[in-house]
Length: 259
Image (cartoon, rainbow, N blue to C red; front, side, top):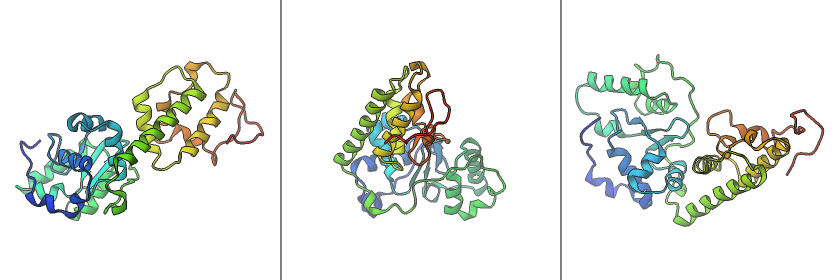
């Protein structure tokens, strides 16, 4: 962990930086200067930590990282960030010490973001290529980030937060589970809304409601677990295209998928 990190004065004239909204700029500056930074630019950090340090609400941090910030890649499942050009601007000193630091980072952070690291820094790929990366993930954020996806307004973020809440409330009304982790549920719903529509998730809830009929509330999924972020996704089997109608005891039956 370095005691200081340089920030070039020209960052304010950088085209990518100028296209960010103020939340994205603050998150970016925090991620390149916080105490958790490492030589590789890959390090673990939670969305809650970013929110706590920047004062930006968790839903907006989550939305910014999901939409994309130039040169920032975030593994939502492992809660690890990759600052794409970090090593290029901070990797000064003896090569053997820098390489040792990268090896240590690699050992601490098991994430598919290392594939992007190797593509960004081919000179360092050779000594990492024989080290196995467990459970690589697909990375939803590409480089460069499409310009039209940047600069989301407060209105866009508010609308997204409202959709999360609507789906959350819809789940509670239909399923009525005993356990309910509200904040984690809203975060997980926001995570999946990048791939699935509100209607997709409501259909999944309807289908799960059908098979849950008659079960005690304690056996009904907490919405945070129904919309879990670790594969396999629990709700995936209840999407319209995957759902096999069942009776409440779990047995298959002929019937129409709930829509």
